Length: 221
Length: 221
DNA sequence: TATCATTTTTACCGTTTGGTCAAATCTCTT
DNA sequence: AAGAGATTTGACCAAACGGTAAAAATGATA
Image (tube, rainbow over all chains, first blue to last red; front, top):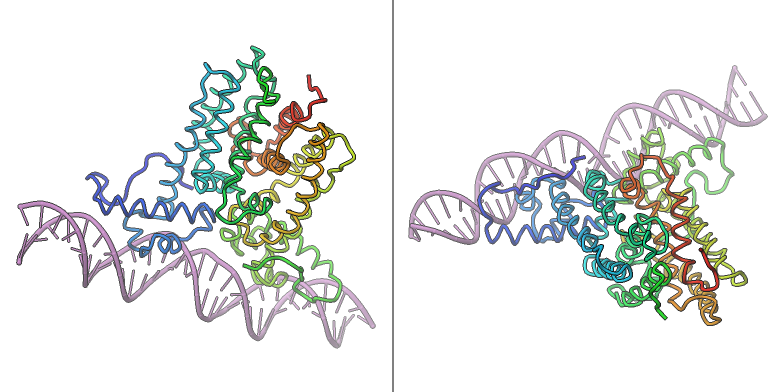
């Protein structure tokens, strides 16, 4: 398995990109996101990606020289999206505000980028063969940093005692669930295919859950 | 896509099973669980399943007549495992006890059957092509029933006001996360491959989270 | 130990898969 | 309008894919 490091485009490592190049690369990446996020890396096929992108397979391979290269390109973009909401947590705000807005950012991310979320989930389920390094280095480092902030709040009595890392796990899982398990959510709630109206209820539920007791000075009554 | 309904075994629909038959079917199912749970239905191959089961592919197909039949057999077994903890929730207990023990049952299920959990997650990510009916009928019905219990508690002031279905989503996601995203959990916590020592911390975190405020009369101090 | 059903293997089949190649077409610049 | 470079296509390939047929090997039973 090739882990991601430096991304290199296919036609002409150097010269700036053509209009057609830019258009087609986005089309391919969009189609690939659709297919990879549904079936995972092994379950996806170049034929399906090409068909979704309305493009012949050899033409697709003119822009990305392998299935893996497309996947790596998607994952690279994804990791920024994934980390962005976490980075914003500040040690200077009120715990309730910081956690509350982090939850809202993550939920918003689930609503806006459900396929990216499923792409990430698929990679996890497969054992993170392509982004293991990222998890161990970049992510771990950022989590350590943010966990320290939480721990500080706990020590000051501004946050209920708990394991900061597991608090993050709880936030990640509950928010991503609405993207990754949206089929189940919709079926249980009796909603149609494209209906994502449950996000308002989700915000309310998760704020009640995470801010109700974990952050003592705040009352949600 | 074939939805599951009645399961039929391959050799001899009627006569009782041989020792060899029983042994080989379990070996196959175990190997298939390993492969399907990592790569999903499309990403899994009969060759890999056969290799994992230390069996030739035609021999494997002597016991199950298609890839799909193996998958259906696994999903059928899975659904019972998945529903069991939910069924146990009783309207007669204390909200804090019922929710607390439900969380512990779900966490225990994640620890004991992580591959089953990932199999389920893969099916969700793919859009539930095989168990869509189950979600809409059996699961929805059971959820409606249990949600009514929660709603009763809310009306009696024994549970903080919230959407009962979304409360269930939160419990499902947080508990299953430890099985489905175990790679991420381990990497972030800096643990080794097989190390699942984080489950104790998880119990503690989730009890703090779900029982801290949602259930007012109980104090976790 | 002979017999019969069960189990396993070997050799295969048609299709799908990821990927290549050279020729054909298109686009942009001059 | 012509030439060069960028783009697209059709024909193809070897390997992997899900699955089959029939013979060979094994197991149970009398």
